[in-house]
Image (cartoon, rainbow, N blue to C red):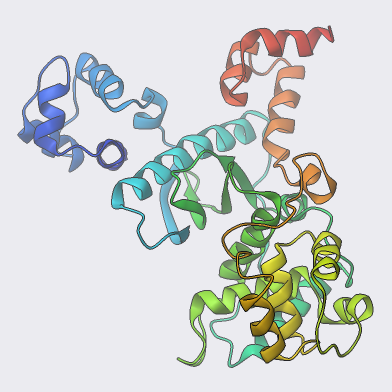
Length: 356
């Protein structure tokens, strides 16, 4: 475990073994670093502290035993994202999960059952099957066809660990399974803090798709496109969209699309694509709109939701914070540890305890 964490922290820092050996105090050789990473040797306490300082990670991260390897990782990243960005994201996620699992253990919470049990499929044959799977998940979770007020709250209620962290610019998020120290698996979805509400909701639905659909049954349907199709169908059910937009439209003005985007809390470009997928607008009409007034929508969101407006006000993970405050209230952790877990000043935690 230590060797894996050390290797990840070194990649995160963009250092070779030789470069790390040259920076750490007290000094060690590159051979020693290699032996640490392969589990053939453990560093002394002084070297361990020096490695943590040099790499900018805590000893809890280097020595943590709650989180095993991240399994079945599905990345939301730009094609240009370097290996270092990926390592940085993994390190941040592992550090936060160590704290998440620790607070669950402190409170004695039982393992959460697999939220996708009975829903996973190995392949989908066509686009209709993708839409059908989105409807099936909605039906099993008793969501009806109305817009989902908060994707974050929904996934947390179903047992997903949803984590909001600062990620490298070219990494938007990821989904994975994590093996805990007791052998149980946890489903984890990570979102970048800097992502706007419209894209965040779509990303969460996209990551849910990865946990439900593990492959496609035809080379004509690319895997990521299938995940996007599921996300659109899950957030914007065809039946509800037909009620709001009408069953058949030859075209649609800009303001109507912006009104609909606020109805569902999705990006205007995603809403426009969904209108074509639902056969409400012809594909040719959708393409024409993307070439005219919507030509910039894929790169720049028109009239984005404000931080505290509508859906945006509810798209923030709350379960971890709630558990920390519960443990603090039961005097199972100290205010100092709570402040560290919540990433806020101790003075603020103490004010919140006193209520003034």
